[in-house]
Image (cartoon, rainbow, N blue to C red; front, side, top):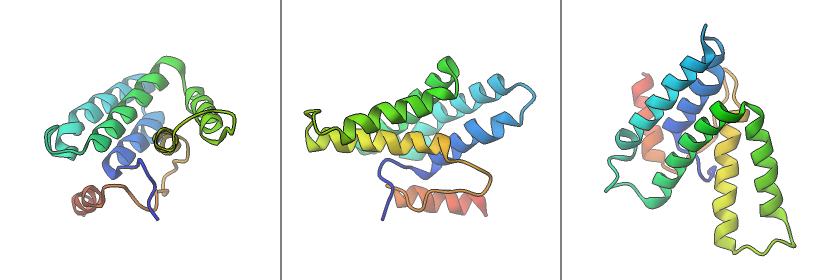
Length: 140
């Protein structure tokens, strides 16, 4: 069972943004550096914009947008956005197509990468296993 909307390389960058940056002397500067690295990684991770599936590009863009929003609004942004999106996804009175609900759920899954992080945690599966395999090779 995969975690829809999760890409391993961006999970690692989210971890650096949340956990590792907190250990830096200048947290804001460390987060800006991770944000820049995330923007640079889009082409490398997804094999260039022409080769990547649209959904992968959208997911990568959402990781970047989330980092930018955390810088603007603080860490509380993540939980507020998760709550807002979950209300939309689960709301019976909200008229959304199944496709839109799935897209919103992917956003919730990305946001949880910024919340449920500690030194040893990892999502169980990723949407793009070839990216996870490449990342695992790089860790060796």
